[in-house]
Length: 334
Image: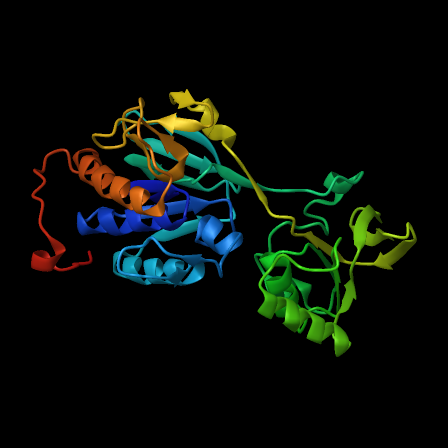
């Protein structure tokens, strides 16, 4: 059982900044994210993409922004449940909540903040038969523990940054690594692509281009993968693990069942404090909607600040909030 003041669903840039704003008001935060690391889209989809509209930074790479946000919230000691999906929200008798996740983590909190970007990200899965039979039994969509691939035969599929970055990282860990990509060129960073080609030329990985997944097979655990190239020639290779990295698809997921007022796949909020129609639950960032909404990180930061001011009354109902500037009061941890 994890006890905290605020449970933040989503550890992207807006969720991380919400920790800072809450911390200034002495409120503790626990963050839950279905991705295995913090950063949301910025880390998972385009870590090296430059961002130009963050105040004070004429240009900053996506992963650098996340690194800075992580450093900014260190004094407030947030805790995390990563690689977990929120499945249930239960209202407690005291007015607070119990949040449960797919890994049976239970979080007791007084306030819930939904900062899930465009929703819960789900991996895009290749459309091949029986793939689901081997999920968790050789087929993985996220890398949580690279050491589990030590001395194993590993196949990575995809052509984006995630596929390239993990290929580079795991090449020295796996017994044998094969990267499979359906095209001749990669979508990921040119520098990463060059490193992958260099690994292939050095014989440290096998690189199969213009090739698609065709089938998976095994007996209780993945044993082999069948591939087909553009000439319609098939090939079967032995493998202990398959990691399809075809990107992520945003879905609202179980949030749609919590009684929140929705507009399509977004949560309607009151712009006074970005509260939802359910008392004690807020929504900030790209997951919310209101007249004039702009889906910008900058806007999400603003929403996080006003949310924290409002959440204070749930966490400290008997205290009066006195707003103070950080330039005067500093950043004081617990």
